[in-house]
Structures are given as structure tokens and as C-alpha cells.
Length: 163
Image (cartoon, rainbow, N blue to C red; front, side, top):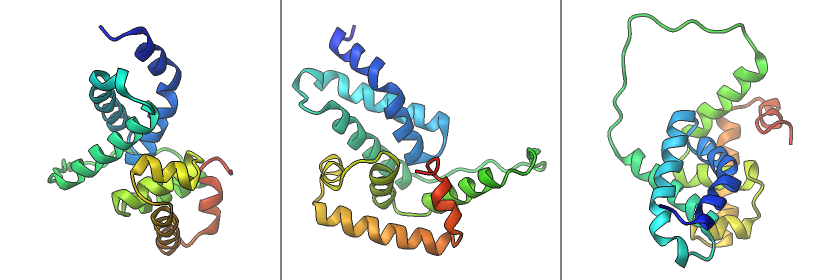
């Protein structure tokens, strides 16, 4: 049975960690699996961890990178699902998420941590185990690539709630 410190940490930080997982992979079910696997990996090391949240974020990024290396299996159906009524904001966010998923995992991780999680360059570097300069250059190249993939400036202002 997990100790009370671990349980308390999970209760307090689960929502924020799940949001990060979702932003990394773009799918709620997959995000829950990603976070659960990271928590399972953290539990045996819990008492020796200095920065558990940073550790969990790094584990999620690494697991996602490993998942990308596996072959993708798609389910092909003859009938497309019905779409809800057109919502421009949702379509713009979908366009941004589609573009974000086209970026390399490390670039996506930098952009998610820096701009959606509002982490500093130093925090992002520590979480990912890279230098601050790498975070800066990766963020710059990633934003440039996103702007090429999504040429609508309004998408960037609505992607994280207008912040």
C-alpha cells in the first residue's frame, strides 16, 4: 500500500499532471494511461525523490517518446462518426493540436512545459534534462514550425484559453 505522502501528493497534483499528460499526447484516455504508468514508476522510488513532479513529467515525456517508436495501428471504418455543430474555436484548437502532434516529441514537450504549463526555461530544462540554451532554441524552432503549419495567428491566442 502506498505511503500517505505519496497518496497526498497524487491527490494534490493529479489534475495538473493529467493536464500535462493530455497536452503531451492530445487524448484523454491515453493521458490517463501515461500518467498512471508514470505514477507506477515513481512509487518504488518515492522516498528517494527530491523533485517528484519533475520526475513524473520527465517519465511521461520519455514514455511518450518510446510510444512513438512503436508501430501505429489504425482502425479503418466505412462510416465516419457524426460531427457536432461547427465551432470555430474548437476547430482552431484542433488545428493547433494536429500541428503540435506533427512536431518531434522533445519539441512538443518543450512547448507544452513552457507555454501551457507556464514553466520557466530553467524548470523546463531541469524537467527534460537538457540545457537552458537547448530549451530556448527548441522553443524558438518549435514555434516557428507551428506558425508554418498553422498560419492563423488567432489560433495561438485561443490555444491555452487566451493566455
